[in-house]
Amino acid sequence: MPKPWRPEFPVDAALAARLAAKLVPEVAGVAPERVGEGWDNDVWRFGAWTFRFPRRTLGAELIRFEARVLPALAPHLPIAVPAAERVAEPGPDHPAPYIAHRYVPGTTLDRARLDDAGRRRLAPQIAAFVKALHAIPRSIALDAGAPRDSAKRDVEKRRAMIRERLPRLAGTRYAHHMAPIAALCDAIPPADDAIPGPARSVCHGDLYPRHLLVNPAGDLCGAIDWGDVMISHPGIDLSIAYTLLPAATRPAFWAVYGTVDDGTRALARVTAAHYGVALALYALDIGDAPLADEAEHNLRNAVA
Image (cartoon, rainbow, N blue to C red):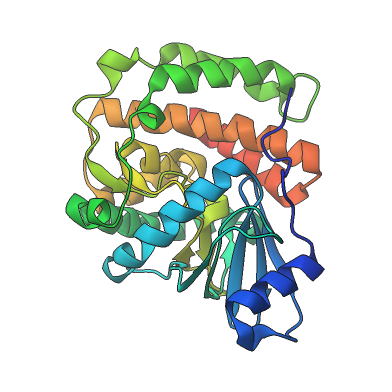
């Protein structure tokens, strides 16, 4: 089966340096530092600048969305975000557009190795960020080119993807999560019953621990990778309450974010389970120990 994290057009240090200097000439001669490698992008830092290079065709489309929309959202958010300042079009050296933005300092939550106390500390901070994001008038995002989404709030699609991937956890460190995750999938109501109303909020669209940053004090300081930004159901982003947070810490989250209906919680939980299974398989495949540990937290939290 093809693995979506395998790059179609990877970027090494030499190519990153060449492309970066074309877009931002003042970084010529600055030593490159690889700061991220995900499903969609290779991320390289050159001093005060960060460059994001799509790794696959889908990532190229997402980077265009982000470059258009995020600068419009940034002034309304309480934490730092990587709003693009320069955009390069595809060329002979790289078949996809790429962007440059100012470096956003911080440690991604999968690298922060948070204990339950650290997660409890973050719960109200993350809730405040998500609440501010969802409160942004939709017209601001739509005028900037954000797409409308329905597929990401499709419970049946999420359920089917979990069931297809779940058997691949057999024989791994995650095998003991298979039965609880399967039971959660069975318990989520059908899509027509679970998700009321139309898509209605400005959403990050891919909000999980790898896309949130903390500072050395353990406080939330940034949110990255906005390629899936969209107008959609808020339950998509609220999955962070079931990926990152143990059950005992969630009251602090909901106290800040506010009350949501049962259908929104159902979508959040099935989305969290989807993240947990996908992250576990990804972490095992690439041998990423911190991410593998965070996937363990994710799977446990989703069913708690």
